[in-house]
Length: 353
Image 1 (cartoon, rainbow, N blue to C red):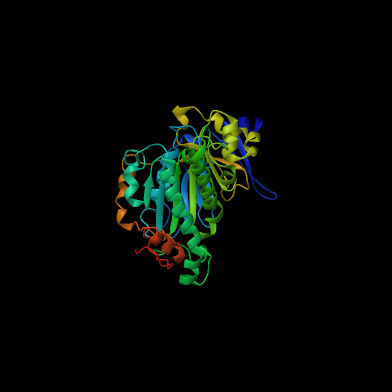
Image 2 (cartoon, rainbow, N blue to C red):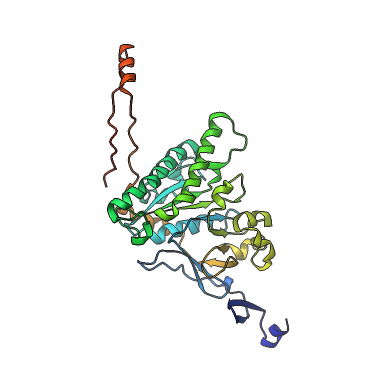
């Protein structure tokens, strides 16, 4: 307080830059009240831009070797817009493809993601069974990737050469992912489908990292009933928009947020000033700590149109399913019983570009 008075400023903040070096600054106003344009990444820069922090520094999430991102927060504060911005920042690259799960609507044509669906390999609504089919395809892609990488590049390490048109980076965008993973009140086949979804979401978060398949899981509250903890706790970057409770913030950001009052998302619920403000952890330079970010300003009306205009870059790179191999003796038995089951070859084809 004494230093703030001496400098005639509102607050004083300090940040440890490295051993023996502390950065101190006096703040006259609140930098997060300042609106800046969204910063688009350079063509060869593999990051997802966010916005500026209280020190007016740009914050971005590096994509190389990223296990995934969890995005939480109350509705109406900017979760979907940020995820759309991330899609837009990479939509003009032929070496990036998208898979969209819009858990906000039963018919994805009429949801927030409907206008950009042409740029994605597929887009599904909130039906868990339809999502199950598409998650199965993504897991097949992940399992097929190592052999494809070795055949094309001589190594199974995706980021050694990075994304290409034939082996692109795949972003899996799951908005309100709890609709595909919450088993509460379910029994029988419905519960089995959800539990299978959970396992496949876990595969994406654990195995996709080194193979160029990155999941971004958005839901209002990243608790264990909304997203499996085996998925959530493996996602290294946490983004949390305002929440009503510190418990909800902890689910997205980890227990350390309880000791960091200035960055507590439950202190940011004033919608008049904090729409577009979030708290982030897991990005370089934070050392496991937290930072507030004002997301760069975006044109909500023009953003979907820009993404849709890149539809011609969309390619379905999901490999074809392995054919069912039928035992010949079973075929003969079925034929003698008056039915016919064709014997299928055990060869495997990849979808053409």
